[in-house]
Every structure is written in C-alpha cells, then in structure tokens.
Length: 348
Image (cartoon, rainbow, N blue to C red; front, side, top):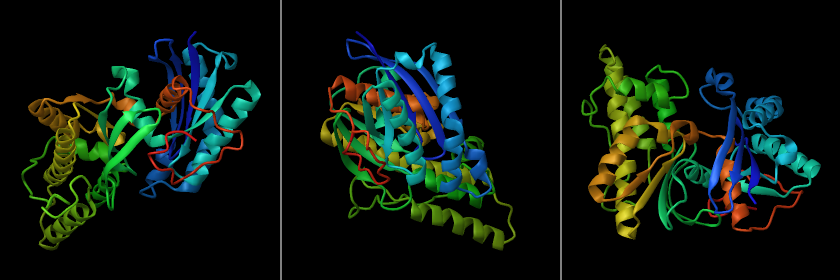
C-alpha cells in the first residue's frame, strides 16, 4: 500500500511544502512542490535577515500548504506521515516549520520525522533519477554549505569527506556580485554575465589546491578577496570594469576547484556516481564542467533539474519517504530545531 508524505522546509528564505507518494517498491513519486520565497525582502540588505525570514515563513506556511494540496489533488486526510527540516538553518526560520509540522502531525495523528536539510538536497535527486546507487558521492553546493559527502544510505549513513573551511561557494557568489554591482542573490546574475565573458581573462586563484592542503576541503574566501582587490585596482587606475570577464573568470575558478576535487574523490574511493545538489548546482558552468570531467573519468553524473536544486519542500518529503521506507523511528512531538545539525544525523 503506497503512502503519502508531506514535507515542510523553512531553513532559510524559502517556505517549501511538498507532497510525494512512497510506492511499495520503494520508489518515490513527486505529487506537488510549492515554494514561497522571501528573497526580494532580503535583497536590499544584500543577504538574508533572520527575523524577516521568520516572519515571512509565518505568513506563507498555510497558503503554501494549501497550494500544494490543491496541486496534488489531495486533502489533509490523505497524509500518512510528515517530514520537516529540523536543521541545519536559521533558528527562528526552522522553528516556524517545525511548529507547523508538529501541529499537522498532532491534528492528523500521523508520525512526524524531523530530518536533515542537507540530506534532503541529496534525496531530491531520487525524484528525477530514481534510487541512489550505494555508495554514491554527493557534492552539495549552496549559499551556506559546500561539502563532499559519501552516501552509503540516504536514510541514515552519510559521511563528510570534505567541506569548506571558510565561505561557501554560494556565499562567495553573493559577495562577488555585490563587488560587481550585480543583484542579490549573486548566482544567477554572475552565471548570466559569465556567458558573455572570457573565463581565461583573469587568472584568479584556486583555493586549497596546493600539495600541503587538505585533499577534499575547499576555500573561497581568498578567491572572493582576490576579485575584490582586482576590481579595486582597476578602478584606481580609472579603468572600466569588464564585468563579464570578471564574472566568467571567477566562476571558472569556482567550478574548476569543485569539480576537480569531486572527481578525484570519487576515483580514489572507487565510487561510480556523483550527485551535485544545492542551489549552486543550477549553475551552468559547474554542471557543464562536471559533465566533461565525469565523462572523461567514467563516472555517472546526476544533477537534479534547477527547480529541485534550490530549497523546497519536495526534497524534505523525498527524504522523509526514504526514512519511512527504512522504518526509522518517528520523532517525538517535543521535537525541536537544531540550527547546527550535522549532516551525519539524517533524522531525529
């Protein structure tokens, strides 16, 4: 008998509600994916303001859920379990989602599962490409996280292989966009500008690629600073900033390091599948270069479609479905959010 899982995501500035159907054979079918974003409210600040995000979640939660049920043609009585992002993320934002999920679970008398946002970014790929091979390697790239993860079991066995020691890749995009006078969030406008630029125009540094650096860790703070200094020096000389070339050269440096380390890690660990997920996975150069290098190395590359890469409720519903299928113990109704939840903890 198939089961319907409701997923709720509120870790940052997107209120996401998703519905999936877990079939008896373990496959997961996407039924609805509705998102309300508060990004425009944060744009004038150049980054997410936690208090603004929390208020936006409060206002958007019920309307977003109503749209999801309408899109799926389902009612509340059809829900068999609820999954909610319990962490990591912004404390206030997480608490809005967790509170909503607990209210739905109590009212419907269905099990509640507090799950990990980062694992959700990996699980969402199963909605498009089917079950994950065991093991697989995941490159998670977003505004707040840049990690290489070995996934032996999406429902409960994830190991960090490498991580950023400073800025996440998405954070570097936002800061470089600000330097170039491009809008927030920085990923899409830099990607668009880069298509008209020369990625070899400026030789920006590749962080943590020296012989004594950690093999699979990342660093983007130095790259971000190098871009800012280059622009400052050009302005001091009275030169017009070649925005397209700067954007392309910066983006090439990011994609080069991410894909090189991911492919090398997969080869060294004997893993034949790489999944790239998170908001930056929608970047055209990252996915393009990853495809080239994976094909050359004989590695299968899986990248969810852009809509699934960004924060959404479907990814939490998908992860919840895998947790339910694995017969993990439900969370208690006194579940609380954990803003620093480690990726190794898939469900609480």
